[in-house]
Length: 142
Image (cartoon, rainbow, N blue to C red; front, side, top):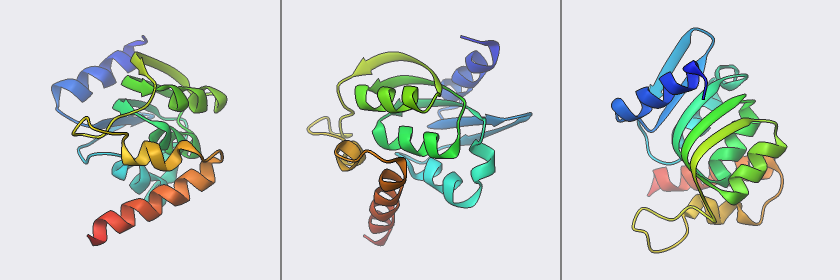
């Protein structure tokens, strides 16, 4: 792992963050659960993701789609699902991970992660992004 990715991964864990993104000389840290911060970047500051290096704890197919849409160049994650890894690789994102799993599970550990399930049958990054946006907006209204 490169020095940059080691630094971002250390910051992720030591700071208790859920996501760390470095674009050029600027590093931002995030704390919301799930894909909310990635979606917010796509919607409000997409240039920050373009070519960025990212450290994340868990990456399912939904997060992978958002990273691909944003043009992320490098990722290190603790856990990645097989569908996410395939999407990341097809998008040309240099991906390193600690553990590969068949799919991401929900926080209770009882079923699939809802975003992983939502994106499971979808193929296009745009379709996944739209579905995630609808899902997140519905969650905010509840």
